[in-house]
Image (cartoon, rainbow, N blue to C red; front, side, top):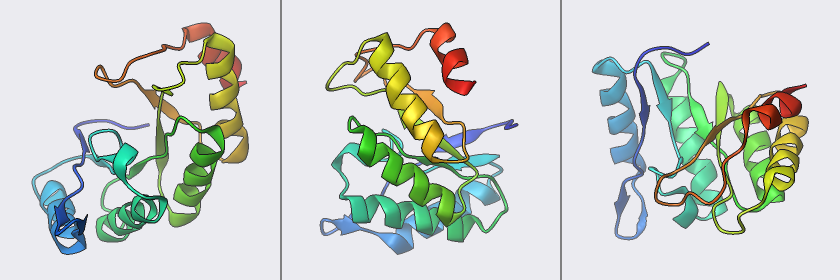
Length: 152
């Protein structure tokens, strides 16, 4: 499905606001330098600290700037399942190629909670989300059996 170097992008700011010009230049530079894919608004891209409007704007700008040259795997994670669904559906409609969904790190769900969280996201979009767990924010890990359950 995906191969090579896929870069988790930082989100640049200027004067407290998303710096769209710097971000677009950064996306172009990543592609020119040979990355095989881009991940905007994962935990590396400051997703927990962005407003919903900023988050969506970063995804839109990344997809628009990449212009099909490399796949865009949009960050769509949240501790809140409904918010993660909203971000996933938005990313799908905006033209992302896949999702990256952080494991809920604040409310620390157990296996059943993780299963329900990811299943709800999967059921709401055509994507099968990928999970990421930041070492800084790790609270729960999803066992392989649950991934299999979620994808069926």
